[in-house]
Length: 140
Image (cartoon, rainbow, N blue to C red):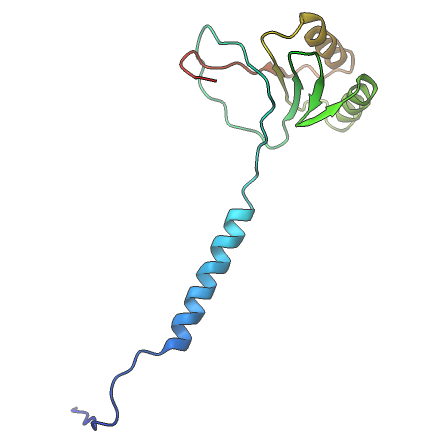
């Protein structure tokens, strides 16, 4: 079947569906980029690991406790006092006793501060504790 097109009826690109597609793509990328969880970094100089282990998958329910060189304790990226730390550990142990805990301790931090955190975790029954180390080939 042959279609006769008059000179007045030229082929045109429809702009409305094209603009709709562009807006849908824009919305998709905006939503996808805001769902990414941002990890803030503590100013902690981690000790270097002697052996490199297999990378474990990152758990979303991981409790991260940090100790910097001055002995200041952090939960996530927020500085906390000793009583706040004890209260948060007690609350976590009551909610989920098998919850994983990661300890980020600065290599120049006094061991007393690290031991205090480990004692609190042990006292409250949180035994699934890992210490975060830097790989030998990582730079600061």
